[in-house]
Image (cartoon, rainbow, N blue to C red; front, side, top):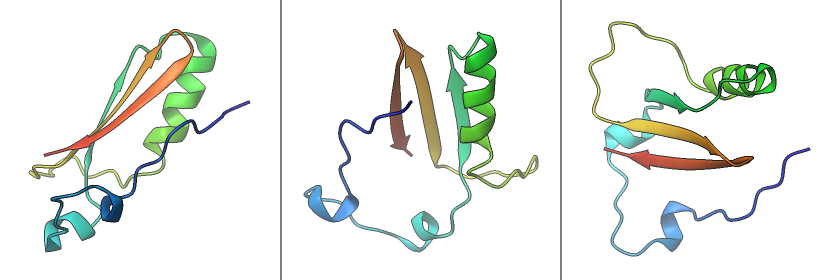
Length: 77
């Protein structure tokens, strides 16, 4: 069972501007501490949300970090 505790959209964060690169959807995905059997399944689910391009040379990164049964999400450049 999964719960979404906090969601903050770009429009609600002051000082953010969406560029053309931010809208294209190509991101590098980093998955941390998904080492159990369930963690591998959840990590594959998160990885499937983004297109796979091994030659990608972008600047945007999405990080999913698992710590004490909480998954932290960060989208940064």
